[in-house]
Image 1 (cartoon, one colour):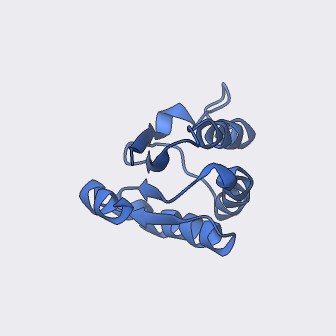
Image 2 (tube, rainbow, N blue to C red; image 1 turned 90 degrees about the vertical axis):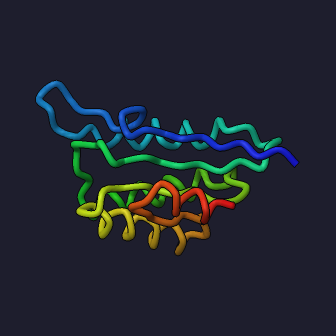
Length: 120
């Protein structure tokens, strides 16, 4: 069986308005689109790499993002790993918990290697 791994750098979906503030609606829309266009014919896994992200999501943003992932989650055949810097682990862990509560297999990691190991 083929496995497809999609690594999504944060800059692919985190967007800001001209004033530099997070454009949450656009970011949410782009992440959902990235997840939903993954080929359903593959046993695919997704890594969201936020280690170089400079924009911070609020706890509320993360809750809504998890809700959006659950809508797009029907396209996730297996797991999605979120790789973040150590100082962002609480936020990534909260996103993972919210997604898991909605049945989406998401886990937060500070190590890219640990994320790969968990995916397989």
